[in-house]
Image 1 (cartoon, rainbow, N blue to C red):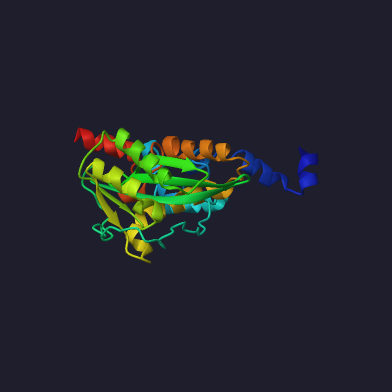
Image 2 (spheres, rainbow, N blue to C red):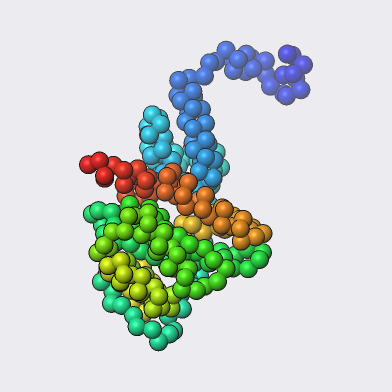
Length: 273
């Protein structure tokens, strides 16, 4: 031991003082907290910041303030995925009829199947673009329908709407809001809406905030998944996106718009209440 202290240039009395000083209760608590923060952070693949981690800790019986979690994350060098901008794919330069905006940035719903939002984005792969259409329910922010294709055609949104209708058991009178993209103005899509007694609503020209909740969803998808991936094939991208939408976003991720609850659990609680 003397040799070790000499090599490290540590006085023997300081070494023995350290040896005889047990961890304090706070030291143990901090270590436990750090371990749980790291577990949750990596469980969610670096998608969670201090607010969501603090809520997750509370659910697991380890209450801690958001400020404390933020402090520990900084010390542990746990940095959530950074936000980046993405482009919009809307093509509104067409001669098809458009619908009025009957959802003037009112992104609140008091029950499921009251208001659905939809939009299209693209995913880069080594084989070319993969186009993704998604429908979300504003009540729970759950993804209720989706479709993917290598072509930006009307059947992309029609397939996504058909999935949504089937999953939600064909409700009537739902407001379905989109932008004025040609796919949403096509005759076949409009006939599908009418045949199922759905109410069409469209954003005003040049007002991205008219569909802000949908833009926010795609922003989250890009930040939390796509920007970290290098998809070699469209099929590989599809598998990755389906896993994110169905297994993670709907069933594990806490959403700020519903008081940081999980969409699937939020709907389940609403159906019981």
